[in-house]
Length: 232
Image 1 (tube, helix red, strand yellow):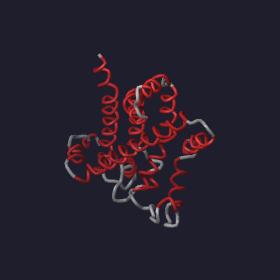
Image 2 (image 1 turned 180 degrees about the vertical axis):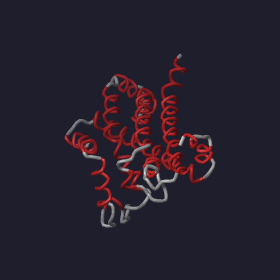
Image 3 (image 1 turned 180 degrees about the horizontal axis):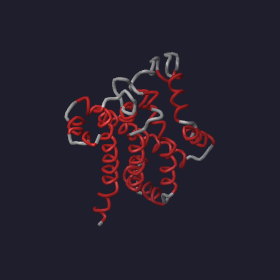
Image 4 (image 1 turned 90 degrees about the horizontal axis):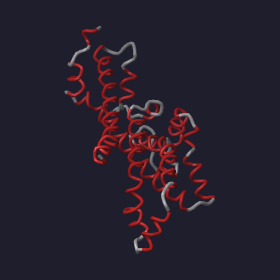
């Protein structure tokens, strides 16, 4: 009904805690998932490019596994793996049904793509810059912080951008692992497609779809648009 397209839908989304909660949930999950994934990949890519041996090759192959497994199969694997306290990787805790398991899945889901991008950035570095820094007495950490990291910064921002946008409306993994009290946007929008959904829920899903587009555009501007103005 065209009469349902009004600004009241935006007041419903932004004027109540229940309307804002899916946006906040997706934002927090996407932000943490993207940051943790990029941080882990920076460490892994550093090892893989600096120490080229069978162990780093095995590490790279392991990180790439989620790229070849369907998202739904990956989610089911988490459900059956982390539903017991006997798993040594969870330190005696059951993660199935908690808010943590979805964050872990988000991080792992973005590792392969981020590794390919960030590894390529490491391989493009000029080794003479690192050698010159060390010859001047800088430690490995100082060399990475003052020389390598500034060069990699644009690539890291791009990786974070792609991860954030990719996770913000992610559905395939989320539908299996989300906490019922903290539903991300993808789940809320999907629920609004049910025949039993109310008119308000359906119209609210359109608002959330617009929010997803605005978040994607704003994030792209913060990473690329501001950088172009500074360079000008």
